[in-house]
Length: 365
Image (tube, rainbow, N blue to C red; front, top):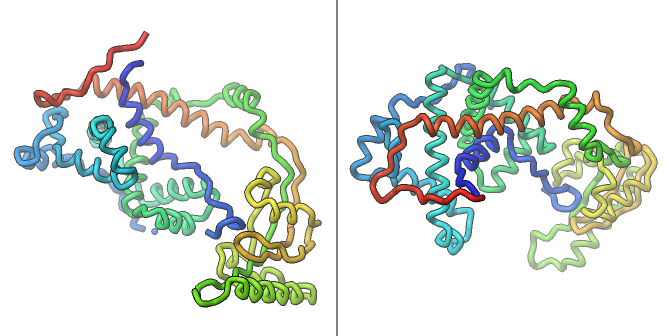
């Protein structure tokens, strides 16, 4: 197997550009900015500043005469170390260090190209990319920020990475635009080969009112807290049967993410039965505009209303075309960028200090 750490750099970069697609937790199971001045990465003073520090920090590698110091590499390793067990870090420290260093080399070479091409992005372009990433996770920008915060991620720091990623996207477009064209034949072939992923199960659009037992007081009997929550839910259900507005009651009850939207959870499909089976089963048993009895889950007591329904079917090609084009374009960008990084490394003058050369892995069969 050939040693190709440039692929790691590529993957890191494209995760920044296109975002992680992991889906947020289901609410029913576990409740869950700008200037218009173009921004451009400043790489002109990098070599001078780093050369000043090199003597005290030690040089890890020099790229086209500008050093990356051991201190800089170690700072990146330290960031990674906060997200993995110490034993695993120590076991794989050299491998992790080399992967990080390869990523830093790749980014340095890319920055040189970005500067040479005078590529800049506006605040609006960065925010549009962030909103696209949030949409891929089926959430709003505000909820996306909260999700990042709950996972200990710094939004402003991540936003700078997205800014750099958008510049990279422009660089790839400028250099390979004619190779990134997706034809109707390409899209049709992908659609036919992946038709199963365009099959849509039956769906219902559900709203809910949720009453959770109040367990903030450790002296309160949990069973009593549940009984009080159940009684409150029963009172709300009676109000609905007497003609109260479901969405307004959901907003007034509050305390869960969908409450400000009148309890709207969007469309739910039967493929999610395994997540919260009792909730989904109750929702699919309802007709449009029908309200359920009280449904208990591990979160609390729900009153469910179905507001729309979609029958099972297959998404037509015309509806899927835009997303297919984006998918195929990302794939081509990834492939072209891997080749681009290999080319940049081959053309660059990369010098390791004696004794710090990366290990050479013999090519496979």
